[in-house]
Length: 255
Ligand code: ADP
Image (cartoon, rainbow, N blue to C red; front, side, top):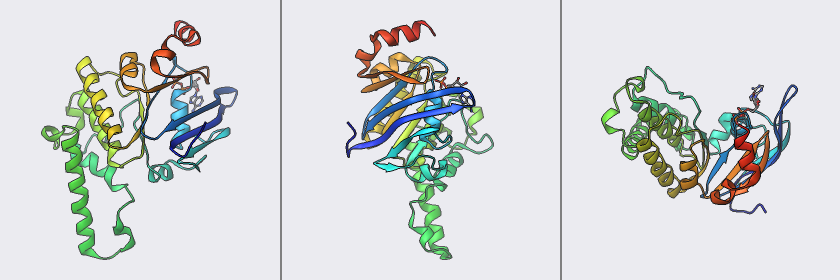
């Protein structure tokens, strides 16, 4: 049952595209501090679910709550102000900016700072600029990007580009982080490192929902896994239980 400690509650969400039902009465509740996995065959509605949660799509029916507050249909920028950050299946980095500048762009959108209450005070603007640079520096350290901070992302290995994207999502200081297939294209060592980073993000107080095809990563990282098939939740529970659920086995064999 939903409780006060829930960060995200998706309630009976249906999303239709013309004739196609991408999500069909999907419900899930994510408690604070959890790493939740979302798995399912291709076309089962995983990315559509993220698009609904992050405001890119308005659900046809149903509701989305963040910390008990109804945010159904709120625009992506409003949700990002409410602490929802996400990464995308395909990298979306600014190719002509350095790694540091990519992080500064993410930081700049963070509306928490006091400066906006005192427009026109130049010394405060300078303080704000300094604060942003300090915070970018912290992210660079935390995500192990010091050696590549002044490089352009396209010149860097794919695994590092993925890490930059994660750092940029964290630049928003989110309370809820949505990761769409973060391990795609990574080698074994990079996947292991990703797992450590996601765990440390959670340990810093962020709730994480992760769409992932790498079952090894899902099993080792997630406390609870929601399985979608054909736009419905077919199983939801601890990874070891979900993995042997007959409907899940059938859905994957049919993929
Ligand atoms: P998954 O992420 O699990 O692979 P998706 O959420 O991307 O699945 O897609 C679920 C279904 O919704 C698919 O049949 C897909 O073609 C359809 N779909 C997703 N987005 C749109 C859209 N913008 N317009 C029409 N159909 C879409």
